[in-house]
Length: 103
Ligand SMILES: [Ca+2]
Image (tube, rainbow, N blue to C red):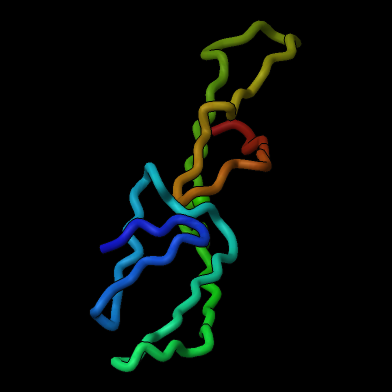
């Protein structure tokens, strides 16, 4: 377990390390580069190896549609999707409205 800070080396004697993340210190969506340098028992250092890890939003958003319970004949009204929300680190960026006719 280790909390990684940009450009701050984490040293372990084990060959694996957990990148410890929570909702409070999550990596933002997108590409993140990690670098490894290994040191031998004579103190010689390797050249770095790097990987790119992509943090992806794979969770669907939730639509929440609010509307007036009843409206007067021939009177405009608003549909409100502002309480919709996303999970997985993303945000709602488009609202697709459809009139479904009379039940
Ligand atoms: Ca999402």
